[in-house]
Image (cartoon, rainbow, N blue to C red; front, top):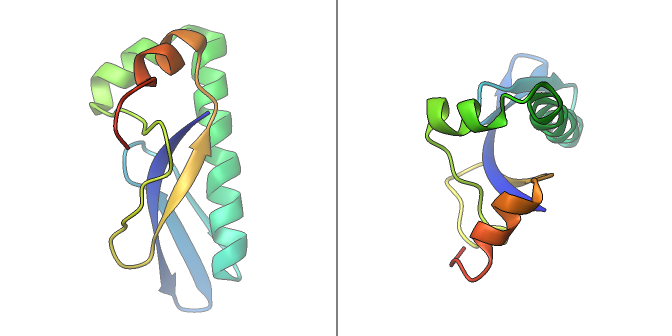
Amino acid sequence: MGYLTGKICREGDWYTATCDSLPVTSQGRTDGEAIANLIEATQLFIESSLARGTFEQILLKYHWKPFARPPQEFEPRGFAIPVPLPQVVRRQLEGCPA
């Protein structure tokens, strides 16, 4: 498991949650629902890219690198997104600082 970061903001009656590193956004009627929806959407985005064989292209296109552990500090309204990672990426993260 690796981690990405996200942000949440309120827009009218809805909360919008956005992944900082990938083109994934979700919403919900509460901040908790928006975050849960974003976590699920981000995990599905990564799982589908792995299944299609485009995961490496996504890494290169968006210049993102997941954290091995949840970050300890966030921007205001920030949070960690747990994401599934292939074994080769998990091995690269071992020993890397968060």
